[in-house]
Each structure stands twice: as C-alpha cells, then as structure tokens.
Length: 230
Image (cartoon, rainbow, N blue to C red; front, side, top):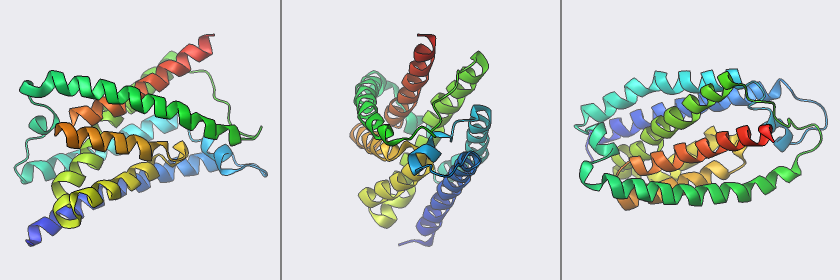
C-alpha cells in the first residue's frame, strides 16, 4: 500500500482524535467542577452543560480550528467537498432519507432517556435557556456539529481510513471516537453514529448524516424550550 495512503490515514486519525480529546476533556473538566461526594457517573455527566456558554463556545472553537486541516486533506486528495456532501441529481431523495432516519434517531434518543432514571438528587436538573443561549446552542449543535463532525467522523472514515483498516472497521473506529466525544450521552451518540453510517453508506452523500445529526440536536433544543415554557 502506498505511503501516501498511510499518511492520509494518520492525518485523519490525528485530526479526529485531537478534536475528541479537546472537546471531551473540556466537557469532563467542566463537569468535575461541580462534583460532590455521592455523585455517580450519570450525575457528573449531567453537569457537562451546566455552563452552556463554556460548552457552546468550546464546541464551536475547537471544531472550526480543526476544519481547515480537514478541508485541506480532502482537497489535496482531489475530493470535492461540495460533491461529497450533495449532488443535485439525488438531493431530494437524500434529504428525504435524512429526515426519515432523523426520526428514527429521535425515537432512539427517547429510549436512552430511561438511563437518566439512574441519576440521584445531586444531578443537574437543567436551567432555563435564554434567547442568547438558545442561539448559541443552535449554532454549535445544528450547523457546526451536524456539518463539521460528519466531515470528520464519517467522511474521514470512508475516504482516508477505509483502505487501511477496511471500510466497516474504519467506520466503527471513528464511531467509537464519536461516542467518546459525547461521552455524557451514555452511549446514545454511538447509536446515533451507527444510524448516520447506515444512511451515508446507503446514499453516498454526507448530507444524509448531516441532516440526521443536526436534526436530532435541533429537536433536543426545541424540546428544552418547549418544556421550560410549560
């Protein structure tokens, strides 16, 4: 196998691993600031978003810092990112697939909420989202997370690591990193990633997992706003 292939795989793994460590590390450090004796892991995880400004800005900053290197990796290998995301001929069908799989992912999210029953009275119960916080959450979790993370975790796995590890193994490896980045979701992100992988492999365009990923996050934001208004 050509040395260039291994170099591309190393670069892809480095970018994605660095992204994961920086964001997951910041989330964990932020959550530990609120630690009290008697908390379990679910309680600690609940405090990841206790400071939404820190959570949102960290997420946006790290993703955008890593993005130029990611786009350069695609460009240097002759991959047009726009074509990788969508093509006019299949766009309508891809969007429909994305929406249908987004609904499936949202149902799976409801099932995972049962895990939170294991929290104690020491857990963070959530605060009210101001308009500013809601806007920050929207930009960080819908376009930034939905677009950037799919370029890293799904696109990298297919184009730069599939030829080294085998496509299925590459997707699973990157999906483990995807789940680790969102460790506080107690495994849901790994399941969400599997749905994104299936949609991407089925339709061949990143717009499908982007819709799934960003759409589920949007549903979560709307849910929080609705619940606090009741």
